[in-house]
Image (cartoon, rainbow, N blue to C red; front, side):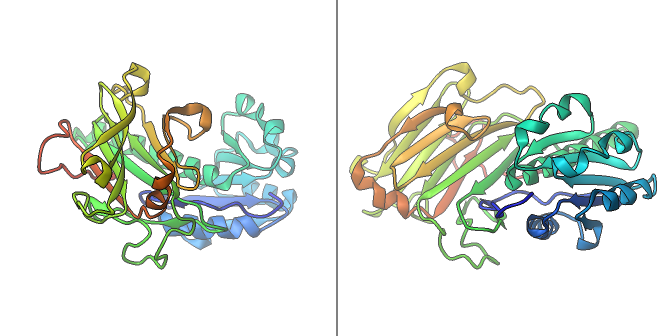
Length: 343
């Protein structure tokens, strides 16, 4: 896809396991996004650079797919224009595993999803493309493991909760892994970033496959129970009865002060239905805005929105730590620590 790269999110995610026979083919006239995407994908998955191939002409891409061994699984990332003329001829080949269209004219190629089963999506954002590819590969691995378990009469542990951290940073995706229940994703071991590139701004996603009540707390203190005069925390609590946004600071006696809540069934903890559910918390210190939503991270999907007092801006801009509880009874102590993924 032509133009400047928009890799602009820090994220936290688990490592994706990619089958050894998988090969990635990128077709585009520009290689800038390809290099960044490949490097990050190799860093976050079991893939090596030698499993990636780039071509800037459709003829080379066509020949690569056509001549590939039928036992290979080729994942294609291509601009719509470059793949348009060769799609019909290649689509049903056994070695063509899946197709992701990555281009500026997303609307033009949206109808392809209805006509070609191997097209997994049309994207104009590399971060969304990255996440969807990893999600699809994860799901394929899960289904494969499930089939093995059924054949062998065994039972795998259920994946329950996943967390991603998104914060703005220019031209780079960075990855952080949760080491403990109280942690700073941009200050963990092996991370060279000592502070948020843009302070007081970010989004936390909580993905759940098995519905479990949780409390998400972002604060300016490593210890979530720190009662210092300058301690400040934003708290999101989600359970089957209610979703609530609140604050904890010295002005409210270091006790939770509710700012807004909802008890609508479609806005609280969702029932188990064998699907993943995404709950998100967004905060912007500059505008003193805090949002909670379910599903896609877009303004129209927000459920709660609060605006703390002007004097809270400095405190929000100093938020550095994430604390999380996951438990069937959030009042139980000690807090039950959660695991990002179980296998």
